[in-house]
Image 1 (tube, helix red, strand yellow):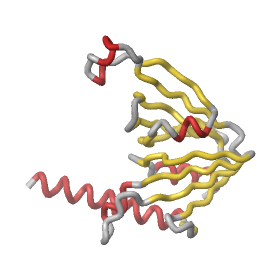
Image 2 (cartoon, helix red, strand yellow; image 1 turned 90 degrees about the vertical axis):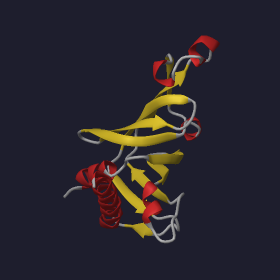
Image 3 (cartoon, one colour; image 1 turned 180 degrees about the vertical axis):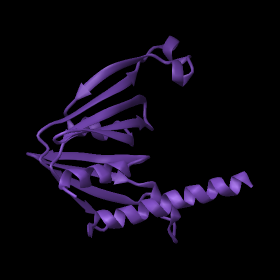
Image 4 (cartoon, one colour; image 1 turned 120 degrees about the vertical axis):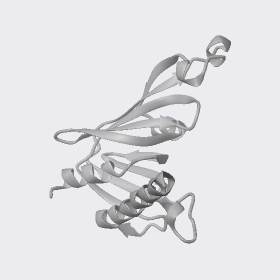
Length: 169
């Protein structure tokens, strides 16, 4: 498996991953995420964070949708509110958006789009980036392998399946 395929596998695990911080230095992009899987561990870790360092990040862009700020729009149900499209390449602005990755798309040779919703006052957005390599770190700054992260993902999805099976009974 090549590095692009590994990055795809990595991003395929991202569901409800909250982006806590974005920083960029040259072609190095660092993304800190809170992942939901810590809820399974004993003791429970609600704010378990991982760090993904991506290299080859020549492009970073975030398109997001800000709810229009007028009384008529605010009185509408959330799903019906009008939005305004905004675009930024500023990591500090991205940090404030409360983006939570739901899925991704990949366009060869090295472009990824992270599709996000938001826990803040925006309707969601998309983070577009390029990457050619990656490293993963746990909340203590220790390296994690893709296989270790896959194990966490498998535990998480198995627990979801068990919950669904219990609810069907």
